[in-house]
Length: 393
Image (cartoon, rainbow, N blue to C red):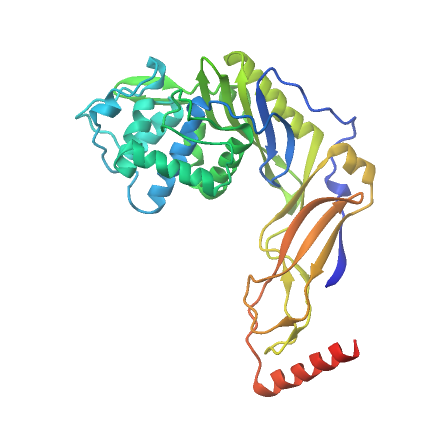
């Protein structure tokens, strides 16, 4: 096992000086705040508690619909036949897009109606069109939840209607929100739409944060009498300087607030806390070369190794200020010897990033080039050298 250090100076990216802030206590039943850029959890309370997600369920309904679109089983512009079941979907007046059997509606309109107006009839119509029945669609929802590691989640319907077998948690909903953003960025605008019109009826998004903070760009609200008022909210603010400029995204999940106003204010408090109390630093860009270690039995004698993704770390702002001119340290552990043939993208080690002696990130290190096997003489010579090195080492 080979180790070496790479210093990453961050003093030029530090936030303005100021005292560290304690995490806020919200008037809600559960919450979690995640930095989507680095994956770090910044604050939480009862993150694994099983609660009714209400219309936050429709985030998974949208996710499964996006998968079906990606599989080319449905298209955004295709017309959907509205069934009597979809037409009669349960829910209050404000959770419908007023579908009618025989009136044309497209998959795109159903997605917008479901995510903007929280339309239950749209969710049922999407489920039936995507999977043939709501039962089959719910089965796919639960399969995807299992695949994503949502351990405290189970769905009984695509709408979020109350059911004893229908629940989720703040941390599971955060996982889903991160997956939606990472896997389907082409559909991000659907979660930020303020108004939606269909059948000569215009409706507004119940996510008031879309009007309060220009950095908010989604995602979904939910409300039922028992669990209260809930939300999954995302925000993106520009951070960094020059070539290191990036959009730092936070995702807040707040479950069980007392009312609409409390849901809005408490979520905004949580997001503002995340931006004020923590800094996210870009250490490396995808493709950055960290080293050029030797390769044995190959056409080339060395290979560039580095990261296959942008590497971000999130650290409390006061901790970064305390570091001052001291760098974050990146320790690379690599298993040697590296032998050809070696595929581009193959994992050859791991990099641990530490701040003040505390680990803050662990990232795979990969080969950034393909190395073909060398000729017979090269392979024979390197085999002898490796044997001799092992014998004398």
